[in-house]
Length: 58
Image (cartoon, rainbow, N blue to C red):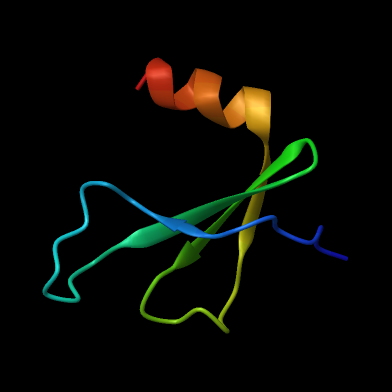
């Protein structure tokens, strides 16, 4: 069962042309990621701290 997101936010790097974008949402201690072109599609779920640490080290 996926946690309920508080609000979805589109990446600040997303252009207005409908290109390849992701949306993020906080849900408790989890970070949810989905394709902005397919909001009803699959959602990836990560521990917030682990995701942020991985992104900073990428």
